[in-house]
Length: 297
Image (cartoon, rainbow, N blue to C red; front, side, top):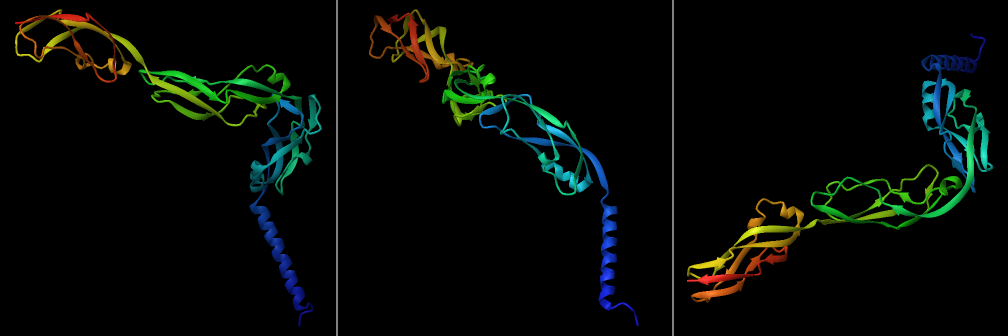
């Protein structure tokens, strides 16, 4: 019969099992040393604001398992500026500033201090300029562009805000646009300059180009008679106002008809005005000559 009670034997077996498992895990997950970049998060001062440039990341040399080190991508270095003063602030980075996953040890921080320039927070209302890239479709004009609101309130470092006289939007592409439109736009702000006026909208007024076109030598014909006739002169020159896209068509001239109504006229010589028939989207500006001599046989 054994000297050791059964419960001691069971306890001893459990200890051996735990020790074996620990050794196995240690072998399966070796400790590594890596250099990792982590993001710097700033707790800003109420009345002071950061001036660029300032660090956005710091480098850590850490040890731990590969899995634990991988968790550092969600970690950060927190720097509190709430007690900062105007000018250059030197802040030492300590382990207490870091949010690290369990099982990760820091053996080096680079740099171990950062310099942050703080300036008084200033406010200024400035006009909005709408920046445009590209060109509207052929035959169309960008007539006007307007911002709503047309002025915005900006805040930021006083030495930066004082130099801003207007603020532009990120460029809006109007390539091949044929219709007027409105859209929300983003201001092209430098770092730590904020828009305090909410959403900005830009409206673009795009219209078809209207041009004055001279058309010479359009034949003048008779209508409404079976008699022979002669019209003098037998051509007319006109000016019309029309969309540029229509004027460019090859058969544009063929769409214009000029005739003299001779219905009911007997043999003789008459002075008559011509009827000029043009499509609805054209406007007649003038015609020359205005009157024609008609000789009916």
